[in-house]
Amino acid sequence: MPAPFVAQGAHALTSVSRTERRLRLTVMDIASLAPLAGEWFQRGASLAEIREALTGGLPDHVHFAAGIIRNRLLRKMPDAPTFAEQRAAEQRFTPPPPPVRPTAPAPPADDTSGAVAAALRGAAVARAALRGVEVVMAPA
Image (cartoon, rainbow, N blue to C red; front, side, top):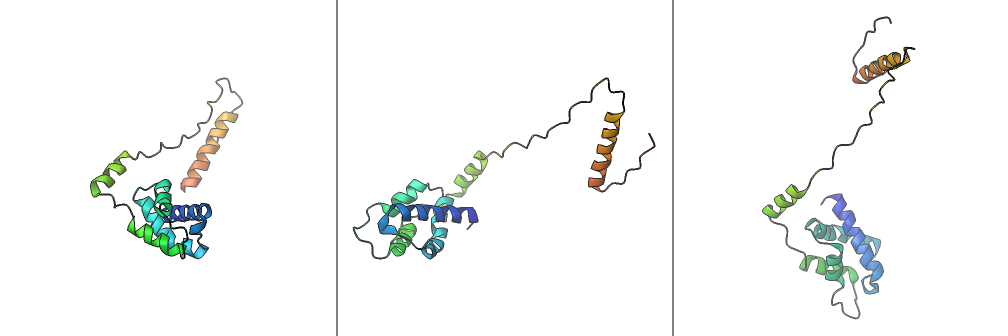
């Protein structure tokens, strides 16, 4: 189970445990049940769907909260997506655009001091050094 889904599952269980007093869980209970809740998220369920599955139709008194939560997470788990549904979800995903690199401002057209040319030569030497290429500079 990928870690982000387990973390999401732990968050969902913590949320339910805090808001529904009959389903109070210990930290160890949450840690052991988080992969099951994470599988719900991996199958496309929302936090609201998990909350409804865990809290809907609870008896007035719950003797063992971790047991009833485990039972409901297993019994009511949504079906795994089919291969075609997984492929469709992958095709809907578009990666973010590449980061925009800042560009250096153009040197002023009337620079006669040679400072711009020296800076450009220094930048070229620095880039080459970072790439591991030795540069032999001709005297200016």
